[in-house]
Image (tube, rainbow, N blue to C red; front, side, top):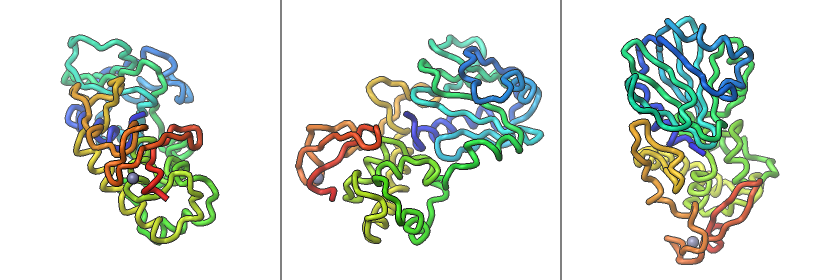
Length: 276
Ligand SMILES: [Zn+2]
């Protein structure tokens, strides 16, 4: 699933085509892609003819600020990606959403599994949506240590599960949470509330560098190539992964064998020796 580095890479890739542009057309070809819209028929009327004022992001959500205070929200789901093309360019299979600007640029969402979605909210609808319950953005608004620690206190869930909770912190997913915990030397199964100050601050300290590194590599494209940059290139952070997807391989720090367990229903990779 695209996580913060992939979504931010996507944001940067679509921003030049969208920022300041007037939207001339929007086509949602699979009804499922607009399932979060209270009335899907509202989407074209809220977008067409209006200009894009800002192309933003919180956690894994792209939030595009449209004239007259509409917010175009896009989420890539499990296997979605956005690409930028010109009208008339050949389309990839599973192109489910197409937004066309007045300069005939197209933002296309390709999503074979249709877990992604598009929604266009009024300010009131946005305030009542799950966007309003998101925690601070893990890259742009990471809480300072004392607040981070207070929010973890007393939590009985596994630290891995808490890091994936978008209400706690927005942006980390399965790959980057495992990578952060390896760097912090903390076992993903530890109860969040049982961590001592030093462990909590080690986790916090590694979040931004891991995400920034992921971003510098254009995110992580795995073997299925579900995620690609908007220009079609693959994200190359996979070369930097220390634990994710490396079950049976040796830890780059202590040479022990990386193990895979299921934590909160998610495949979780860690080193049994240097993560305690
Ligand atoms: Zn190790």
